[in-house]
Image (cartoon, rainbow, N blue to C red):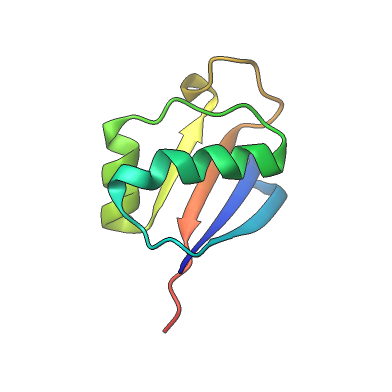
Length: 87
C-alpha cells in the first residue's frame, strides 16, 4: 500500500492538499503514474518528473516540484509530495 501526502504550497503556507492512496507498492518506475493521478485529483497540470525528483523521493521520502517543473502556468509556488510511512 502506498500513501502520499500531496500539498500545494503558497510561499510557506499550505494550500490545497490530499492524501493519495494506492494498492500498488512504491517503486521508482511507477512514481510518474502516481504523480499523474495526484495531479488529476488536485486538478493541476502534471509536472515534468526528472531523475532528481525520483532520487529525492526514494532517498528522503519527499520531493518538491517548483513552477519551473511545470510546462503550463500554475497559481501556487510548489507541489510537495511526501511518502507517508506507517510504523
